[in-house]
Image 1: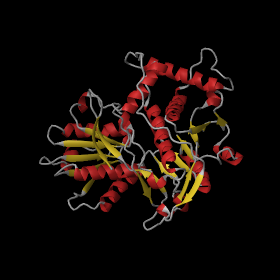
Image 2: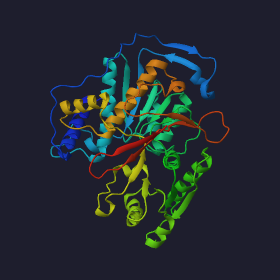
Image 3: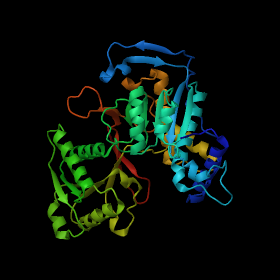
Image 4: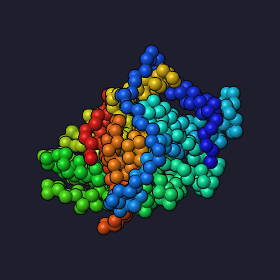
Length: 438
């Protein structure tokens, strides 16, 4: 595991990342002559470390009842830089060699984290970043055994399932809050109240889509299209569980449609009604599977009112083929940034001035999570979970809620962001936010 100490190496990487941004952009990039300033924040007074016990333990976790504030907080940040393969031990890339594209998301996430830390420092909030490449030849268990993470007050990361499980076990044992920034899964973890999932699980997306389908239409014919694969059958079960758990006296039953490419137009038409909206929920995560279902539905569009809802992976899909024209297609997502708020303008202006490029979504995620949780550390100390939804909102309305492994358990398995936006895709303009499910 490599701690990022070689600033020249990282800056070289970021310069190349910015170059890729600029070269891949379809619009001209202009340099701003001035940078927007962040909203003023009063400098926080210097604090010595204090420990104070609160009477009742929130969520039945004793650590959450302790108040522990410090003058400065240590934050470990994990991101997939792939420095070993990208730089091969050199401080700069060899002549003629470009930075691999698979390394860019990690660098972009880190750049957002670093910009947030710099901004916080200007506002009198002291955080110390310890940045690690989780794709280094040295693995996370080796780093843990070295004791390098023992002094951390918060761990954040863009992680995969194995990395998340390793860090989760350590965080639980050391009672350190761990924020999983981008992975949309709990990795089978069911016993760590110090874990916070910022990127909602598919189960939560199913709950949100089912809720919107039931409450978003006065009358509706709800159809659940899924293929006969283990994953999509599991998603179908999650939708049905969400239906059974929903306390709503006007809910309509969900009709199950097992989809395959041989389904005929007449068979599709038999599921649809002409006198009410047909709410068609499609569980396909892949683009080919999603478009196969939507293409079959498009044939029925002239005769039936259709509203087609897809999975969070649909955010990057383009439905611009002629047969999809005019269809109302939606997807769910825990992140949606219209980029018209003061924070987004600040980040955009910074990137135009420094890199002459536009920041990616990973930059915005890195910035927001760092700023959000640093504010919690400043206001509530190391054990902030009791007030986890009381930090300053930037552009995402986080709604972290306890998730329990089994009904009746006293201690949460973890905390998860339950805020889901419903977004309508657009052929010609930016996607449009329809609602947020809190």
